[in-house]
Image (cartoon, rainbow, N blue to C red; front, side):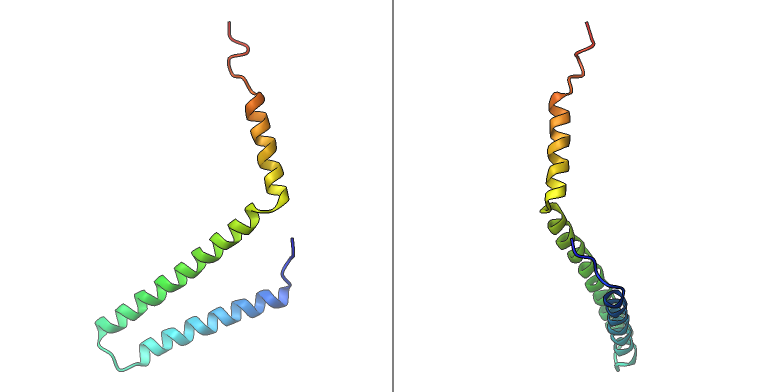
Length: 90
């Protein structure tokens, strides 16, 4: 599994912050009515939350495909198959 570098992390955080702040600035300084500003603001927040959800889903899909996770799942299934809760009863 590849690890990201600190420089890439900083670049990503800065790019996100710049894009978010510039979008908010555009919404605030456009000549719009308040209800139009609210619509654009809510749309921006929904876009950001959807982007985080999409990134999490992609990460989870990649993580689920790794060999380590499949081996752990096989071990758990084996333990559950071998476990008989009624073995000591009777």
